[in-house]
Length: 278
Image (cartoon, helix red, strand yellow):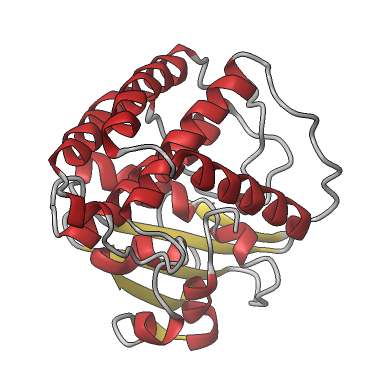
């Protein structure tokens, strides 16, 4: 049996990605700050406020051990409700700030966040598990990669809204896709297939790649290379892949742009995979 994919190391990418965020925010006009994003509830300024809030919140809670009492989380729905309420409060609070003040605070938060993630032992235990991958315990590399996907996709939401390119390049986007795809085994846990079946998932474009989901008796496993009998092959354009996995596009629109060969139930289930807590 082939080995599973290796850890995704992204701590060194925080600093250059955050530098691009600051450059972007400083360039926005008043009209652009008010532009609607693909997130129905949030305009550009709301997304920026969310990025500031989550960076400061994680530093306070995880790095400094300072935070409110953790609520009683008994299910994925409980976790999603808690996170969504925290996000709502953060956007409401930091959304009151002027763009200039917000950017100034973001500069501090970005610097401290980058330093924090670079300081972690990637193979050490993370404070929080990556729940959307079905883990009850995670290593730092995975939680850091998860955090990187958050920083990347929210910045990309702003860039998409205001028409600014810059971070959909392989250096940044491929690790994001690789991290998202680690959710495949958990997302497919209820999808049946005979033992030895293989589902292949491609993201087309310079930033993409291929991921292989193999059916064992105990369930699905993500592999580094293909093995077994291929029953489906799904190809997703890189332009919409991140939007599929972050609730940024409806299923009908995504389906029209995705190619599925073979078993359409297996191949199409990936369009329901969400790699965020929501």
